[in-house]
Image (cartoon, rainbow, N blue to C red; front, side, top):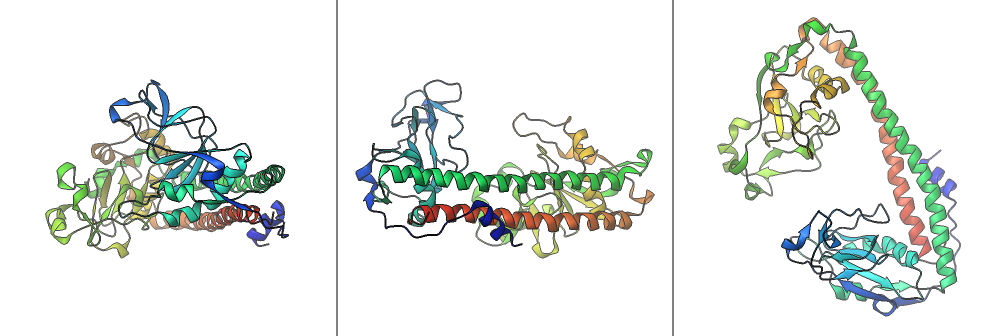
Amino acid sequence: MDTHLYIARIVGINANMKNEIPKYLLKDIATITAGQSPESKYYNTSGDGLPFFQGKADFGPLYPEIKNYCSQPTKIAEKDDILLSVRAPVGPTNLAPCKVCIGRGLTAIRPNSSICLKYLLYFFRYYEAQLQKSGTGTTFKAITQNVVKNIEVPVPDFTEQERIVSKIEELFSRLDASVAEFQTAKGRLKVYRQSVLKEAFLALPKESYLTLDSISDKIFDGPFGSNLKTSDYVESGVRVVRLENLKDGWFDDSKKSFISPEKYAQLSKHTIYPSDLIISTFISNSIKVCQMPKSIGNAINKADCVVIRLKEDVLPQFIMYYLMTKQLYNTLIHQVHGATRPRINTKQIKSMYVPNPKSCDQTGIVNKIQRSLSICDSIEQSIDTSLQRAEALRQSILKQAFEGKL
Protein backbone atom coordinates (compact mmCIF):
# COMPACT_ATOMS: atom_id res chain seq x y z
CA MET A 1 0.00 0.00 0.00
CA ASP A 2 1.22 3.53 -0.79
CA THR A 3 2.65 5.00 2.43
CA HIS A 4 1.00 8.37 1.88
CA LEU A 5 -2.43 6.75 1.58
CA TYR A 6 -1.69 4.53 4.57
CA ILE A 7 -0.85 7.50 6.80
CA ALA A 8 -3.82 9.47 5.50
CA ARG A 9 -6.11 6.56 6.32
CA ILE A 10 -4.71 6.32 9.85
CA VAL A 11 -5.09 10.04 10.41
CA GLY A 12 -8.55 10.14 8.86
CA ILE A 13 -8.58 13.53 7.13
CA ASN A 14 -12.06 14.86 6.41
CA ALA A 15 -12.22 17.11 3.36
CA ASN A 16 -15.85 18.22 3.64
CA MET A 17 -16.36 21.89 2.90
CA LYS A 18 -17.56 24.21 5.64
CA ASN A 19 -18.73 27.80 5.51
CA GLU A 20 -16.12 30.41 4.66
CA ILE A 21 -14.44 31.84 7.76
CA PRO A 22 -14.29 35.64 8.24
CA LYS A 23 -10.80 37.17 8.28
CA TYR A 24 -9.24 39.91 10.43
CA LEU A 25 -5.90 41.71 10.37
CA LEU A 26 -3.51 40.45 13.05
CA LYS A 27 -3.08 43.96 14.47
CA ASP A 28 -6.83 44.03 15.24
CA ILE A 29 -6.91 40.76 17.19
CA ALA A 30 -3.54 40.68 18.97
CA THR A 31 -0.90 42.76 20.75
CA ILE A 32 2.29 42.76 18.69
CA THR A 33 5.71 43.49 20.21
CA ALA A 34 8.77 43.81 17.96
CA GLY A 35 11.97 42.49 19.49
CA GLN A 36 14.98 44.71 20.15
CA SER A 37 18.44 43.37 20.93
CA PRO A 38 20.13 44.72 24.08
CA GLU A 39 23.86 45.47 24.10
CA SER A 40 25.87 42.26 24.03
CA LYS A 41 27.52 43.11 27.36
CA TYR A 42 24.21 42.32 29.05
CA TYR A 43 24.07 38.74 27.67
CA ASN A 44 25.00 35.82 29.92
CA THR A 45 24.48 32.11 30.47
CA SER A 46 24.55 32.23 34.28
CA GLY A 47 20.87 33.01 34.80
CA ASP A 48 21.24 36.73 35.53
CA GLY A 49 18.09 38.54 34.37
CA LEU A 50 15.38 37.28 32.04
CA PRO A 51 15.71 34.36 29.62
CA PHE A 52 16.78 35.81 26.27
CA PHE A 53 15.78 34.67 22.80
CA GLN A 54 17.49 36.34 19.87
CA GLY A 55 16.36 34.63 16.71
CA LYS A 56 14.94 31.42 15.33
CA ALA A 57 12.12 29.80 17.26
CA ASP A 58 12.26 26.14 16.26
CA PHE A 59 9.16 24.49 14.81
CA GLY A 60 9.50 21.36 16.95
CA PRO A 61 9.02 21.70 20.72
CA LEU A 62 6.18 23.91 21.95
CA TYR A 63 8.55 25.85 24.20
CA PRO A 64 12.13 26.72 23.16
CA GLU A 65 15.01 25.67 25.40
CA ILE A 66 16.41 28.44 27.62
CA LYS A 67 20.17 28.82 27.10
CA ASN A 68 20.87 32.56 27.41
CA TYR A 69 19.83 35.41 29.70
CA CYS A 70 19.83 39.21 29.60
CA SER A 71 20.46 41.34 32.69
CA GLN A 72 19.14 44.54 31.04
CA PRO A 73 16.14 43.47 28.94
CA THR A 74 14.64 45.82 26.38
CA LYS A 75 11.58 44.26 24.73
CA ILE A 76 9.68 41.71 26.78
CA ALA A 77 7.30 38.86 25.93
CA GLU A 78 5.00 37.33 28.52
CA LYS A 79 4.48 33.62 29.15
CA ASP A 80 2.67 31.91 26.25
CA ASP A 81 3.13 34.81 23.86
CA ILE A 82 3.72 33.44 20.36
CA LEU A 83 7.35 34.00 19.35
CA LEU A 84 7.57 34.52 15.59
CA SER A 85 10.95 34.44 13.84
CA VAL A 86 11.00 37.46 11.50
CA ARG A 87 14.54 37.13 10.13
CA ALA A 88 16.93 34.38 9.05
CA PRO A 89 14.75 32.33 8.90
CA VAL A 90 11.31 33.85 8.50
CA GLY A 91 8.29 32.00 9.86
CA PRO A 92 9.12 29.45 12.62
CA THR A 93 7.14 29.83 15.85
CA ASN A 94 7.15 28.82 19.49
CA LEU A 95 5.57 29.94 22.75
CA ALA A 96 7.43 31.96 25.37
CA PRO A 97 8.07 29.53 28.28
CA CYS A 98 7.85 32.40 30.81
CA LYS A 99 8.49 36.15 30.87
CA VAL A 100 11.40 36.62 28.45
CA CYS A 101 13.50 39.23 26.67
CA ILE A 102 13.31 39.08 22.87
CA GLY A 103 15.90 40.27 20.35
CA ARG A 104 15.22 41.85 16.97
CA GLY A 105 14.96 38.48 15.24
CA LEU A 106 11.66 37.81 17.01
CA THR A 107 8.22 39.35 17.32
CA ALA A 108 5.91 38.50 20.24
CA ILE A 109 2.21 38.07 19.49
CA ARG A 110 -0.40 38.00 22.27
CA PRO A 111 -3.96 37.23 21.05
CA ASN A 112 -6.89 39.07 22.62
CA SER A 113 -9.61 37.26 24.57
CA SER A 114 -11.60 36.39 21.44
CA ILE A 115 -8.75 34.30 19.98
CA CYS A 116 -7.73 30.85 21.21
CA LEU A 117 -3.94 30.85 21.73
CA LYS A 118 -3.29 27.48 20.11
CA TYR A 119 -5.61 28.32 17.23
CA LEU A 120 -3.43 31.32 16.40
CA LEU A 121 -0.22 29.31 16.93
CA TYR A 122 -1.37 26.61 14.51
CA PHE A 123 -2.42 29.29 12.05
CA PHE A 124 1.13 30.65 12.00
CA ARG A 125 2.51 27.16 11.48
CA TYR A 126 0.17 26.79 8.53
CA TYR A 127 1.08 30.26 7.25
CA GLU A 128 4.86 29.80 7.68
CA ALA A 129 5.62 29.03 4.01
CA GLN A 130 3.70 32.12 2.86
CA LEU A 131 5.55 34.30 5.35
CA GLN A 132 8.87 33.00 4.05
CA LYS A 133 7.93 34.21 0.57
CA SER A 134 7.34 37.70 2.03
CA GLY A 135 10.94 37.92 3.23
CA THR A 136 13.23 40.46 1.57
CA GLY A 137 16.96 41.18 1.77
CA THR A 138 20.15 40.01 0.08
CA THR A 139 22.32 38.91 3.03
CA PHE A 140 19.40 37.24 4.81
CA LYS A 141 15.62 37.27 4.47
CA ALA A 142 13.45 39.27 6.89
CA ILE A 143 9.92 40.61 7.14
CA THR A 144 8.88 44.01 8.46
CA GLN A 145 6.49 44.73 11.29
CA ASN A 146 4.07 46.13 8.73
CA VAL A 147 3.91 42.69 7.09
CA VAL A 148 3.28 41.05 10.47
CA LYS A 149 0.56 43.51 11.49
CA ASN A 150 -1.35 43.10 8.24
CA ILE A 151 -1.47 39.32 8.14
CA GLU A 152 -5.04 38.22 7.51
CA VAL A 153 -6.22 35.60 10.02
CA PRO A 154 -9.41 33.54 9.57
CA VAL A 155 -11.37 33.91 12.83
CA PRO A 156 -14.45 31.76 13.47
CA ASP A 157 -16.27 31.96 16.82
CA PHE A 158 -14.32 30.82 19.88
CA THR A 159 -16.11 27.48 20.16
CA GLU A 160 -15.22 26.66 16.57
CA GLN A 161 -11.61 27.69 17.18
CA GLU A 162 -11.41 25.23 20.07
CA ARG A 163 -12.98 22.49 17.93
CA ILE A 164 -10.41 23.10 15.18
CA VAL A 165 -7.52 22.98 17.68
CA SER A 166 -8.88 19.76 19.17
CA LYS A 167 -9.18 18.16 15.73
CA ILE A 168 -5.69 19.28 14.67
CA GLU A 169 -4.15 17.83 17.82
CA GLU A 170 -6.11 14.59 17.44
CA LEU A 171 -4.82 14.15 13.88
CA PHE A 172 -1.29 15.24 14.80
CA SER A 173 -1.27 12.70 17.61
CA ARG A 174 -2.06 9.89 15.19
CA LEU A 175 0.48 11.20 12.72
CA ASP A 176 3.15 11.48 15.42
CA ALA A 177 2.57 7.83 16.35
CA SER A 178 3.22 6.81 12.74
CA VAL A 179 6.33 9.00 12.56
CA ALA A 180 7.60 7.49 15.83
CA GLU A 181 7.33 4.02 14.29
CA PHE A 182 9.38 5.12 11.29
CA GLN A 183 12.01 6.73 13.53
CA THR A 184 12.24 3.55 15.61
CA ALA A 185 12.79 1.58 12.40
CA LYS A 186 15.62 3.97 11.43
CA GLY A 187 17.21 3.42 14.84
CA ARG A 188 17.09 -0.33 14.33
CA LEU A 189 18.71 0.05 10.93
CA LYS A 190 21.58 1.97 12.53
CA VAL A 191 22.13 -0.86 15.00
CA TYR A 192 21.99 -3.41 12.18
CA ARG A 193 24.58 -1.47 10.14
CA GLN A 194 26.98 -1.65 13.07
CA SER A 195 26.36 -5.36 13.51
CA VAL A 196 27.22 -5.87 9.80
CA LEU A 197 30.52 -3.98 10.25
CA LYS A 198 31.34 -5.77 13.49
CA GLU A 199 30.74 -9.19 11.96
CA ALA A 200 32.89 -8.37 8.92
CA PHE A 201 36.01 -7.66 10.98
CA LEU A 202 35.35 -10.02 13.90
CA ALA A 203 37.38 -12.96 12.58
CA LEU A 204 40.51 -10.93 11.72
CA PRO A 205 43.40 -11.61 14.11
CA LYS A 206 44.05 -8.67 16.45
CA GLU A 207 47.79 -9.35 16.52
CA SER A 208 48.01 -8.50 12.82
CA TYR A 209 46.63 -4.97 13.22
CA LEU A 210 48.83 -2.09 12.02
CA THR A 211 48.83 1.66 12.49
CA LEU A 212 46.94 3.63 9.86
CA ASP A 213 50.10 5.62 9.18
CA SER A 214 52.02 2.45 8.24
CA ILE A 215 49.60 1.58 5.41
CA SER A 216 49.24 5.16 4.13
CA ASP A 217 51.31 7.23 1.75
CA LYS A 218 50.15 10.46 3.33
CA ILE A 219 47.80 11.71 6.06
CA PHE A 220 47.25 15.46 6.23
CA ASP A 221 44.84 18.08 7.48
CA GLY A 222 43.66 21.23 5.72
CA PRO A 223 44.87 24.83 5.87
CA PHE A 224 44.48 26.54 9.24
CA GLY A 225 43.81 30.10 10.39
CA SER A 226 44.75 32.91 8.03
CA ASN A 227 45.52 30.48 5.20
CA LEU A 228 41.81 29.99 4.49
CA LYS A 229 39.52 32.77 5.67
CA THR A 230 35.81 33.35 5.18
CA SER A 231 36.62 36.09 2.68
CA ASP A 232 38.42 33.55 0.46
CA TYR A 233 35.20 31.78 -0.49
CA VAL A 234 33.67 32.56 -3.87
CA GLU A 235 30.56 31.60 -5.86
CA SER A 236 32.36 29.06 -8.07
CA GLY A 237 35.85 27.68 -8.60
CA VAL A 238 37.75 24.89 -6.82
CA ARG A 239 35.80 22.84 -4.27
CA VAL A 240 36.52 22.97 -0.56
CA VAL A 241 35.54 19.83 1.35
CA ARG A 242 33.90 20.79 4.63
CA LEU A 243 32.66 18.92 7.68
CA GLU A 244 29.05 19.00 6.47
CA ASN A 245 30.04 17.00 3.36
CA LEU A 246 31.18 14.02 5.44
CA LYS A 247 28.57 11.40 6.32
CA ASP A 248 28.71 7.79 7.48
CA GLY A 249 30.42 6.24 4.47
CA TRP A 250 29.17 8.68 1.82
CA PHE A 251 29.91 12.15 0.55
CA ASP A 252 27.07 14.69 0.79
CA ASP A 253 27.41 16.94 -2.25
CA SER A 254 24.34 19.09 -1.47
CA LYS A 255 26.41 21.81 0.24
CA LYS A 256 29.10 23.35 -1.93
CA SER A 257 31.91 25.78 -1.09
CA PHE A 258 34.53 27.14 -3.48
CA ILE A 259 37.77 29.11 -3.59
CA SER A 260 39.26 30.86 -6.63
CA PRO A 261 41.86 29.11 -8.82
CA GLU A 262 44.36 31.72 -7.62
CA LYS A 263 43.73 30.81 -3.98
CA TYR A 264 43.88 27.12 -4.84
CA ALA A 265 47.35 27.62 -6.35
CA GLN A 266 48.52 28.82 -2.90
CA LEU A 267 46.94 25.82 -1.15
CA SER A 268 47.53 23.08 -3.75
CA LYS A 269 49.52 20.93 -1.30
CA HIS A 270 46.14 20.19 0.33
CA THR A 271 44.72 18.71 -2.90
CA ILE A 272 42.46 15.66 -2.42
CA TYR A 273 42.40 12.77 -4.90
CA PRO A 274 39.29 10.67 -5.74
CA SER A 275 40.71 7.56 -4.02
CA ASP A 276 41.42 9.45 -0.77
CA LEU A 277 39.48 8.91 2.42
CA ILE A 278 38.35 11.97 4.40
CA ILE A 279 37.74 11.70 8.13
CA SER A 280 36.32 14.30 10.50
CA THR A 281 38.30 15.29 13.58
CA PHE A 282 34.98 15.67 15.44
CA ILE A 283 33.59 12.37 16.75
CA SER A 284 30.83 13.31 19.19
CA ASN A 285 28.34 10.61 18.09
CA SER A 286 30.20 8.65 15.44
CA ILE A 287 33.24 8.77 13.19
CA LYS A 288 32.35 10.56 9.97
CA VAL A 289 34.43 9.18 7.13
CA CYS A 290 33.90 8.79 3.37
CA GLN A 291 35.78 8.39 0.10
CA MET A 292 36.28 11.37 -2.16
CA PRO A 293 34.00 10.95 -5.21
CA LYS A 294 35.50 11.21 -8.69
CA SER A 295 32.84 13.70 -9.77
CA ILE A 296 34.22 16.49 -7.56
CA GLY A 297 37.44 17.09 -9.49
CA ASN A 298 40.09 19.34 -7.94
CA ALA A 299 39.42 20.02 -4.27
CA ILE A 300 41.09 20.83 -0.98
CA ASN A 301 40.03 20.00 2.56
CA LYS A 302 39.32 22.25 5.53
CA ALA A 303 41.36 21.87 8.70
CA ASP A 304 38.73 19.74 10.46
CA CYS A 305 38.70 17.19 7.59
CA VAL A 306 41.81 14.99 7.58
CA VAL A 307 42.79 13.26 4.32
CA ILE A 308 44.02 9.65 4.34
CA ARG A 309 45.89 8.63 1.18
CA LEU A 310 46.41 4.86 1.39
CA LYS A 311 49.12 2.79 -0.32
CA GLU A 312 48.25 1.28 -3.69
CA ASP A 313 47.69 -2.25 -2.36
CA VAL A 314 45.10 -1.09 0.20
CA LEU A 315 41.43 -0.96 -0.78
CA PRO A 316 40.05 2.39 0.49
CA GLN A 317 36.56 0.98 1.19
CA PHE A 318 38.09 -1.74 3.39
CA ILE A 319 39.70 0.83 5.69
CA MET A 320 36.70 3.18 5.48
CA TYR A 321 34.33 0.51 6.76
CA TYR A 322 36.63 -0.34 9.64
CA LEU A 323 36.90 3.34 10.59
CA MET A 324 33.09 3.39 10.81
CA THR A 325 32.92 0.58 13.38
CA LYS A 326 31.64 1.07 16.91
CA GLN A 327 34.70 -0.73 18.25
CA LEU A 328 37.03 1.95 16.92
CA TYR A 329 34.68 4.71 18.06
CA ASN A 330 34.64 3.32 21.62
CA THR A 331 38.45 3.33 21.62
CA LEU A 332 38.77 6.88 20.29
CA ILE A 333 36.10 8.51 22.43
CA HIS A 334 38.38 8.11 25.46
CA GLN A 335 41.15 10.03 23.67
CA VAL A 336 39.17 13.07 22.58
CA HIS A 337 39.77 16.68 23.54
CA GLY A 338 37.13 19.34 24.08
CA ALA A 339 34.01 19.18 26.24
CA THR A 340 31.45 20.68 23.85
CA ARG A 341 32.87 19.35 20.55
CA PRO A 342 34.98 16.23 21.17
CA ARG A 343 37.75 15.95 18.62
CA ILE A 344 40.90 14.05 17.76
CA ASN A 345 44.01 15.33 16.01
CA THR A 346 46.03 14.16 13.00
CA LYS A 347 48.61 12.45 15.21
CA GLN A 348 45.91 10.32 16.83
CA ILE A 349 44.47 9.44 13.42
CA LYS A 350 47.88 8.27 12.23
CA SER A 351 48.29 6.05 15.30
CA MET A 352 44.90 4.30 14.94
CA TYR A 353 45.21 0.52 14.74
CA VAL A 354 43.44 -1.04 11.76
CA PRO A 355 43.32 -4.58 10.31
CA ASN A 356 46.33 -5.54 8.21
CA PRO A 357 44.99 -5.52 4.63
CA LYS A 358 47.46 -8.24 3.59
CA SER A 359 46.11 -10.65 6.20
CA CYS A 360 42.67 -10.99 4.60
CA ASP A 361 40.58 -10.86 1.44
CA GLN A 362 39.86 -7.12 1.30
CA THR A 363 37.60 -7.34 -1.76
CA GLY A 364 35.56 -10.23 -0.32
CA ILE A 365 34.98 -8.39 2.95
CA VAL A 366 34.01 -5.15 1.19
CA ASN A 367 31.60 -6.96 -1.15
CA LYS A 368 29.92 -8.74 1.76
CA ILE A 369 29.50 -5.46 3.67
CA GLN A 370 28.13 -3.63 0.64
CA ARG A 371 25.54 -6.34 -0.09
CA SER A 372 24.16 -6.05 3.43
CA LEU A 373 24.34 -2.27 3.62
CA SER A 374 22.61 -1.87 0.23
CA ILE A 375 19.54 -3.55 1.72
CA CYS A 376 19.70 -1.10 4.64
CA ASP A 377 19.99 1.81 2.22
CA SER A 378 16.90 0.71 0.31
CA ILE A 379 14.84 0.35 3.48
CA GLU A 380 16.07 3.67 4.85
CA GLN A 381 15.22 5.45 1.61
CA SER A 382 11.66 4.12 1.88
CA ILE A 383 11.45 5.29 5.48
CA ASP A 384 12.77 8.75 4.60
CA THR A 385 10.20 9.03 1.81
CA SER A 386 7.49 8.09 4.27
CA LEU A 387 8.70 10.71 6.75
CA GLN A 388 8.64 13.37 4.03
CA ARG A 389 5.11 12.39 3.13
CA ALA A 390 4.12 12.51 6.80
CA GLU A 391 5.43 16.07 7.05
CA ALA A 392 3.51 17.00 3.90
CA LEU A 393 0.40 15.48 5.45
CA ARG A 394 0.96 17.58 8.58
CA GLN A 395 0.88 20.70 6.43
CA SER A 396 -2.19 19.36 4.62
CA ILE A 397 -4.01 19.03 7.96
CA LEU A 398 -3.20 22.66 8.81
CA LYS A 399 -4.21 23.82 5.34
CA GLN A 400 -7.60 22.15 5.61
CA ALA A 401 -8.08 23.49 9.12
CA PHE A 402 -7.66 27.11 8.04
CA GLU A 403 -9.56 26.79 4.80
CA GLY A 404 -12.71 25.62 6.59
CA LYS A 405 -12.42 21.98 5.47
CA LEU A 406 -11.55 20.23 8.71
